[in-house]
Length: 308
Image (cartoon, rainbow, N blue to C red; front, side, top):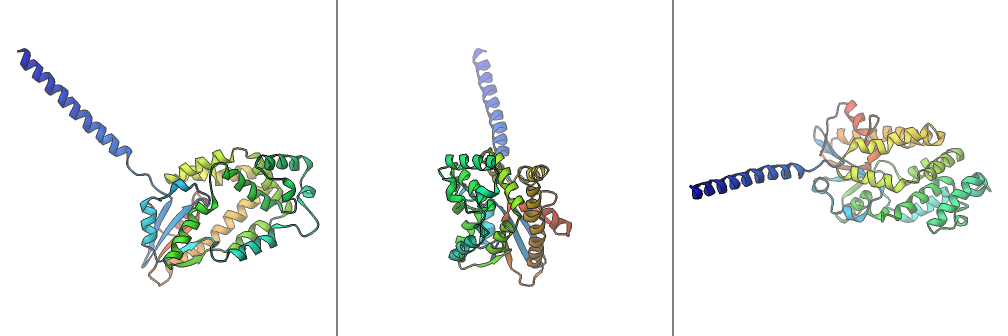
C-alpha cells in the first residue's frame, strides 16, 4: 500500500509539474509576444507606403533594427526622407554659416537678459563649452547645440539616427532617394522665427533640466511603438509649454501644423501616382502621433493605416 501511495504521489507531482510547465510556457509565450514598432503600412491601388517614425538621435545599441523595419526597407523601391543630409555636406555647412550668425551687430549677450545669459553660461560651462564662443550665434542655433551637448552625456549620437542609417543603406544599393523637404527649408524654419520666439524656445529648453530623462522615456516608448506615450512626451508637452511661452506655441504651429500639411500632400501623391512602386518614408515620429498628427490626417482622408 505504501508503494502504491508513493507511486500515486510521484504521479501527482509529475502531473503538477507538467501542468505548471504548460502554464509557465504559455505565459512565457504571451510575454514574448512582440510589441509593435513605429512603422505603419498604407496601400492604395498599385502603390504601397511604409511610414517609419524616426528619432533623429539614437544610441548605437538600438541596432540591428527590428526585422519588421529592415524587411520593409528591403522590400521598398524608393527611400523618402525629410531632408537628405548626406547629399552635399559642404552645402549644409554653408547654409548653417549663412543662417546661424547674427549679421546686424547683435550678439547673444545683447539679446538675452542678464539672468538668462548667466544661466546659459553656467550650463555650457558644465558641458565643457565657453559661452563666449557662442556669442555670435542666434538663439535658435544655440538651442540646438545645447540639446545636442546634453544628449552626448547619455551616448546619443546624431550619426546613429534612423535617417542617416537608411540614407547610407540606400546609397550603398543605389536606391532612389526623395525628399519631403530640404535642409535649406528646415534651416529657414528655425532662422525665420522672430528673436523673441527664439529666446522663448531657448528659455524653455533651459528650464527643461530633465531633457535626458525625457529622451530616455521617448526611446523606450519608440522601441515598443507606444504612440500614445510618444504623443504625451512630445506634442502634448509642447502644447502645455506653449501656454507659458508664446515662442513655443509659434514653433509648434510652424514645426508641426504647417509642415504636417505639406508632408501629407507629398505622402498622398506617392500613394496615388501610377508608378506601382513601394515607398519607404521616414519622418520624425512626433509628426505621426496624436490627434493632429499625420496618421490621423491620412485616416481622415480615407486611407487605411496598419501599425506593424
